[in-house]
Every structure is written in structure tokens, then in C-alpha cells.
Length: 104
Image 1 (spheres, one colour):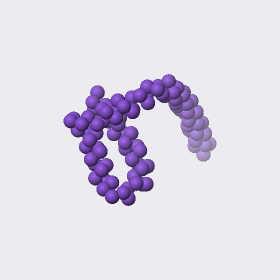
Image 2: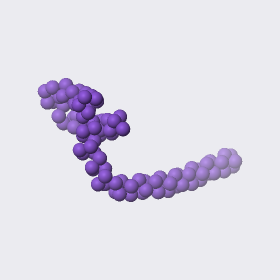
Image 3: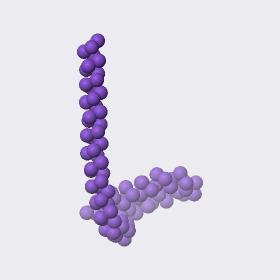
Image 4: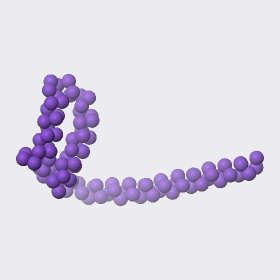
């Protein structure tokens, strides 16, 4: 569970850091602060990832659980429809290519 909390918090940190890195990398000691933050997250003594997960991530995910489930269901339905659509297009292209090859 501890590692799950760490990786979730670290993934959120990396996702936000991708955008904020461009804006605030000019701050003095930015990279040292970022390294210290990751070490704080990872340390078994400070349990930074557990703290952030329990205070911020878990309550947010719990509040938005139904919304997340709805998005997952929609994505599953859309992915099925998309695969059927592209499958039909692929079969049509293959059939057309076969007919053209046969006529030549």
C-alpha cells in the first residue's frame, strides 16, 4: 500500500512537473528543491507520499469516484465503437485492394 501511494503521488508530481518545469525552472535551487521533494516523498521516516495521498489524493478521488467511473464506461464504449469502425474500414480497404489486384 505504501508503494502504491508513493507511485500515485509521484505520477501526479511528474504530470504537473512537466508543465510547471517550463515556467518555474528559473528559480534558484529549483532542481535541488525538486530532488529534496522526491526524497521526502520516498523516505520511510517522513512518509511524505503517504501524507500527501491521505490528505489530498484519496479525498479527491473519493469525491469524484462516480464521475471517474462514468468516464471509464464512456471510454470503453467509445473504444469498442472506434475499433468496429476502423475494422470495417480496414476490411473495405483490403477488399478494394484485392479486387484491384485481381483485375490487374
